[in-house]
Image (cartoon, rainbow over all chains, first blue to last red; front, side, top):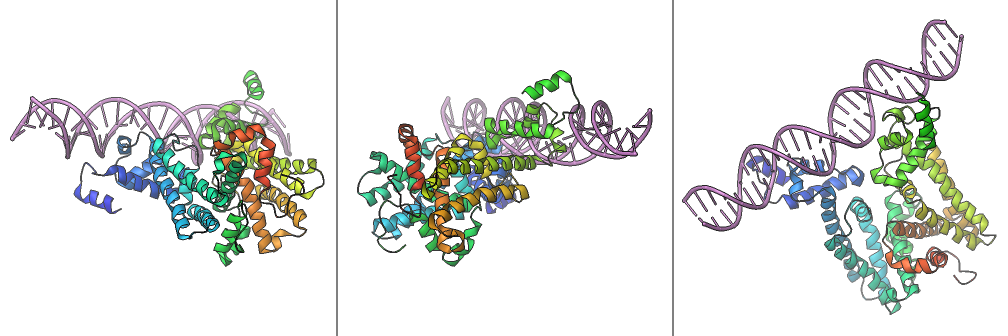
Length: 212
Length: 212
DNA sequence: CGAAAAATCTTGACGGCGTCAAGTTATGAC
DNA sequence: GTCATAACTTGACGCCGTCAAGATTTTTCG
């Protein structure tokens, strides 16, 4: 907004930092219109440039979305690791906290979450995106490793445990986000953290240390 | 195909059963191109009619998708209830069977499953669709009711149990479908049913009756 | 310093999309 | 058998992503 206005005033031909401006505009476009109605021309308009300007910074629409999902993935991973570090030393509490952060990120950034798991629009072979995704997934695996005292990916049972824990959290995030769990609205309003904790922790590979 | 060819030969102006032909064409279009690339003009072409013909049977694209998702939801529910009835009398075995059917429907009909949970394209206020969805959801709730001997929707804890079980199964289906669990490929290939059973049953509100 | 090269952005065009309006053809009611 | 109506086609509109060509600015380098 401020950038666009500035650009209008100065009537500059060159933008100066169009690539970053396009990323910011794309995030607004995505948040306001959703992944379904996301439009490259809309992004260009938000950034105050012509409809063909983005081509000089991103090969096509999917390349722009790939760049956007990369920063989204980074934030997503950071939200989880920061929640873990705020949860103290107990492995179980840390793991539950990261799961809650997973769900809350999805609820606070529904379109970015959609994009992360859309599996169609962005290019998931992009090396930088792959790196960010591996980092985020790694914290999940590490959390389970701390719980069971071994590398879960090394055994079939461990892999299934990882899959089950991830699925549990992801299912909660997805179904809440899609509005398919309106019957929980009251319970979430009453004690949101407790309800999320119950939903997230029900699949953990070790017993609770306290009541949850 | 056969219908289109017949129509070509006879050069009929009126189709005769275009509404149903469009639904069949739409299912093929969806299966082949996915929800992202689904096109009303493509459906019309598959049915062998002009691009504007569908308008006389469906108000717009979303209305067609609403009709399609309604029959998909019906099949989805049927897959689960039929799996339950084949599983015998044990409440737990029946519930696990329905969960496995949930996941397998998603894997066998990825685009229909996408459509069911897309939450954007179809009109989920449509009364017939609402009815089919309630039926499918009802079998989930009934399965849990049989397990705990009470109506789970009547208590906060019961509702959370329903949400947790649904989330677990839905997360597995979604992540497998999105190709995010390639690390499980070997385990699924080795003993698919066992792996799915483990994934699906880990969140049940009562202990297993035998090893799974 | 200044001209050539490169990078950046605009304008215009193309085909494909969903949808609307108007015209054409078949069906069915009377 | 006529005629209203339903079913379908044709053509148009604006929006989309992308490509090509031209305009403008910046950078390189002789």
